[in-house]
Length: 197
Ligand SMILES: Nc1ncnc2c1ncn2[C@@H]1O[C@H](COP(=O)(O)OP(=O)(O)OP(=O)(O)O)[C@@H](O)[C@H]1O
Ligand SMILES: [Mg+2]
Image (cartoon, rainbow, N blue to C red; front, side):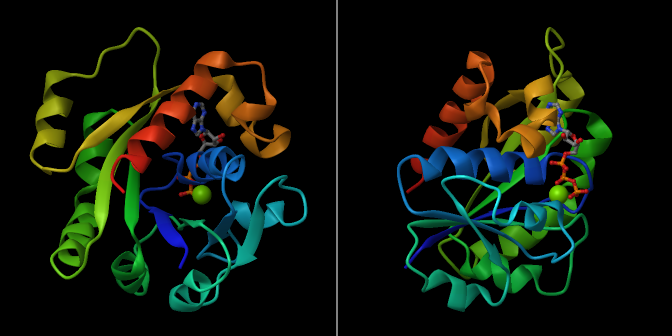
């Protein structure tokens, strides 16, 4: 059975698709990897036949996808909480919740986190938050740290605001670039996720 890693946050533009694709490229270097998007109109689906080293799958049914011959399937999700996201969480092995480091962004994760916690009470689901688009030389505020603390979900790393990420869909992600700092960030994030298994 493929491991299912779902990237979710009901807010738009927090970097779900960007991280899903970079992580898929990373895992694709080592294991059989696929990427899908529960939203057929989602940006990820435009990569069909273009992405190298990974397969882009049309989203059908999570239980069926799991049976396909992959080691890991990344599931990108749209910027709203659709009715069927909860069953997807229940079938996932890991839910990664990217957020920007601003207080309003962190407050906005609550709805997603509540669904994650509900799923965790019924399954073996693991979950973590990753801070995304962190501005260089700007430290996260005390208020933001407090907000994050109340969710009681591990925070596994920081992805900085970098041009290479904004070009991910055009250029094949950080591993096709010369940005060693970005590659290191995605390497570290992948290792942190693997440590949960
Ligand atoms: N670490 C980063 N540094 C710089 N730009 C980033 C970073 N992560 C994402 N971006 C850019 O931010 C924008 C939003 O990212 P992305 O599309 O991945 O978010 P999303 O959560 O999938 O959005 P949606 O919910 O609308 O699907 C994109 O233009 C993307 O290129
Ligand atoms: Mg997206």
